[in-house]
Length: 280
Image (cartoon, rainbow, N blue to C red):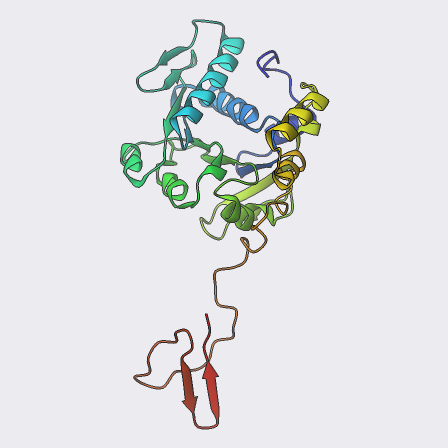
């Protein structure tokens, strides 16, 4: 993607860029359609719009992943502003754009990592490769840093492929939705728009070669290949039940006998005229 001009977008990327800023984004699906690139371009646009009031945070779970997105961000910014026009603090992983906006890159993996975000404010937060997080708890907590001066909209974006450690929670929250239609995420109260795409929408790559290489990388795991190529969140073995609710699926009853023990595996409760069996 490095040879692609910043003003070149696929039709899918253009549609993503046109989603109103009032909505958070879940950029999901197969590999190769440019999720990370379009997220970076949204960050650049945010900085152009709000200039020295714009503070963007992009997180990944691992330092190698952070280095990867650092290289892609640097390439895009050099293409837009010219080499040397954007300053970069390699110790703090902060790009400062000529318009005064800043793009911060950071690693978030453990609970202790969250301490460095305490008291910091960002108008746009991007959790790239969110599927690498087995639980959404850290990413949810990161929303506490999502704030900006009055008049500047705040936004949260995640990108993810099927098959990672976070496959289950992402599928439950964002996949089982109507694409392009805003919905409320009951867990955070935020309004999201889900996008699912595949490499076939990316006109800037050799699609045949990309498919061959992706299949080769999944040799012996055709389910993963199908998930990555087709953006199929149902193809992963062992993931069939991951999206089921974690709430009880039985109707509530009026009361339990006073002093009764909590329902546990195999516990049987008897009342006059009825009995209950509890199972886990």
